[in-house]
Amino acid sequence: MDVKTIGKLVRNKRKKLNITQAYLAAAANTGVRFISDLENGKPTIELGKVLHVLKTLNIKLEVIDND
Image 1 (cartoon, one colour):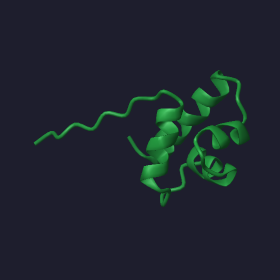
Image 2: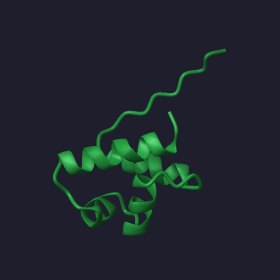
Image 3: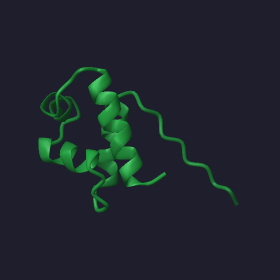
């Protein structure tokens, strides 16, 4: 998984819920620009905020140590 894939997932879920970027930004306590950057797969996006947006959308992210 990469940033672009996460961005597409966020966009698809937001559209499925029929909410705007502005509504999601307000619900996740971020800016609209951040949501746009996230959905467009900006590689330098802040991880903590991404995790908060995922939680707001009820998207579970699983990290597995393959060691």
